[in-house]
Amino acid sequence: MTTKEEWIEKDLKYVWHPDTQMKQYEGSDFKPTIIERGEGVYLYDIDGNQYIDGISSWWVNTLGHSNPKLNKVLTQQTEKIEHVLLADFTHKPAIELAEKLVKLAGEPFSKVFYSDDGSTAVEVAIKMAYQYWYQKGKPEKKHFVSMTESYHGDTLGSVSVGGIDIYKKIFNPLVFETLKVCAPYCYRCPKNCKQGECGIECFNEVEKLFKTRHKEIAAMIVEPLVQGAAGMRVYPAEYLKKLRALCDKYDILLIDDEVAMAFGRTGKYFAFEHAEIKPDIFCVAKGITAGYIPLAATITTDKIYNAFYDDFSQLKTFYHGHSFTGNPIACAIAVENLKIMEEEKIIENLQPKIKKLKECLEKFQTLKHVGDIRHIGMIGAIEIVKNKTTKEPYLFTERIGHKVFREAMKNGALLRPIGNIIYFLPPLIITEEEIEKLTEIAYNAIKTVTEKN
Image (tube, rainbow, N blue to C red; front, top):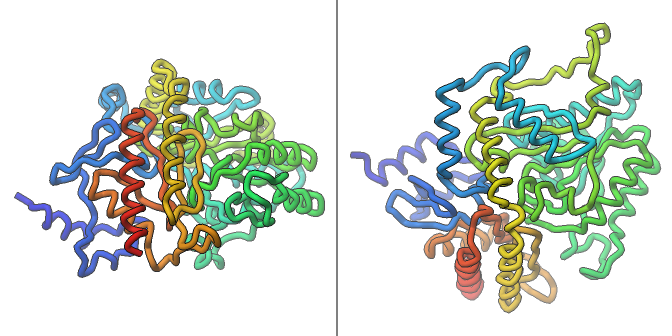
């Protein structure tokens, strides 16, 4: 029988983990945790230890681990057809899911283009926007605008429109140039406005850029209301409202990267609903299958689609596809996921949990090294700082967030930080009692670690 130590030894010998400096495991008692099973909001490791999954296993799990209804659909669809190409062929789950997504998003959305993950959904949106303008006789509209500290994925196109140096800098020779505007980071305002008392002055940069260069701008891409990888930075819905109006004024497409925020994370199905606007193109992934199978979709309107509709005389076809595009198993699970959310009123029943999360976050204000507390819907974030008054951050090399993560694991919570940001993004089925337990573990972990440092 293979022991835990032997499994870990094999892991470190053969597996290259994502976003991980593998040398950290060398000569250390800190090793990858072997997860054997999951149930509801809990994960169980090889030793039987239980952890609240406070980050939905990288933001994908919405309905809890090993959901019986999703398990059943997975088995049933596997017995019908596991995969078939989606070029010149189709299948019922792909059709049914596309219909559900279009109806859920509402007018003017009408078309769904499937892909495999969030990065590829963004790649599709970028290529779609670029080719749209080319085929509309405006090839000069080829530049993309995005925010500083934005994250849209790890493929080269999505890295191009991203703005976080750690993911982008080394690849600069490989990516295309994009136009950047400052992000609305309310805690450390780029325009030195007082938090909660600004007129969204950072938006002036967008207005100036659009005014001078709109004839060459194809689209602006945004993470709606929350810049996830930047540290769950929440910004006002008014920013999106103003951006939609400005895009209309200057004939620029608005791409909404809902990969992380869709399907209930902000308290609504889609984050753009908070601003009461509709983008021209939006991308979904992560929660679309409740964490079961990789799947993504880029959703758009007839306005975009019709620019590609042709009789082959002008080669307007959108030549983009993946082997597993619209996989039947993934689509069937996504259909069931949305069905469960509707029938069990998952979104409608979030309000008491959102209120409880907000209440639990307030207690973190008493901690000496908590600089900022951010919250929207079922997302909460704590920014740990060296000095609360000056907002001086801890250095990356001090790994304060990582130390909090390890301390929380000892006490039964999975909280994988973003630098020095400890955040909560649990499955939507979490109870109010479990929210209290999760945040209590985090509170004690932050207190313990910062008092030692």
